[in-house]
Image: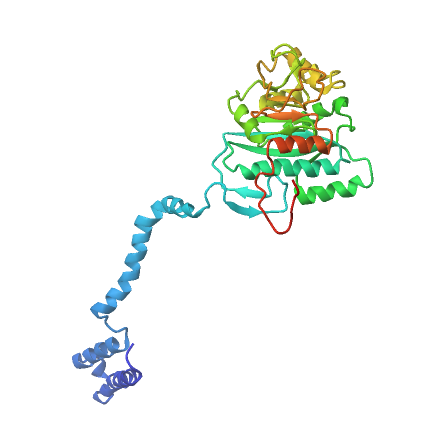
Length: 366
């Protein structure tokens, strides 16, 4: 824009050009000189002509925008992939939340090969046992971020019937988020709880199904990496996995899988939930035997796998059957850990405290 002094001068000149020919009888508006003067003044009060450098300053941002739109925007996803290189590598701590022990620490992992839900059927009153199990499974999952499977652990019991449970269990849920309360059963493992569990899981996780669902007791130590390795080689359909009963049998087709812990593929979980004609009248009794009976009558679970001798009962001084034997290095699960000394024995054998660092805050005598 012209400087203020020049602007005022140009305005005055324009006024003079407009009225200066008035003495000529009003014909000055059509005089060629007057017309040229008006054009000159109109040009003077308009936008100034831009220099070459000014034009360059105006065009440069426009060219930059055009470049971004034509060349950068189509490669948006490539840029995002470059940005993703800032994500911590597998095993790097990324977040912590007020969730369950199995999910309180989030790790950057590759897409899992399969998803496994372990439902630990327990009782509401055994708070100490759940505390122990959360540590046992939480430490295993945190210690092996490259695990090939997504493993979720849930504690399952039937409807609450005590006033203290109605306060303490919600506290656990708020703190850990790993509890399933079944509304359709009374607290009796052999009174239909297992059937209610599988039926509830089929509905609860219908939108995000697991590949396998494992029913487990609360007195079993599952070595999660070993279980994942074993299940990784199993079929994803019509699969029934565990430790065969009777104890002296290694033939998975002969009997059924021990109630210590057995897994069904997702299609079998759905089938159990909807097979009323088969399960009706067959839900009360030894729950592991009932599950085997459903599959036998329904002609299901044709892909059966026996995990013995890697799944077994706690070693007793005088074994009562062949389900019990000494600890072995390739153990998948140890059952009948009925008290803390047995748990300590098993956890010590498998060196669960190996990650403990020396500290001035504690000292353990040998």
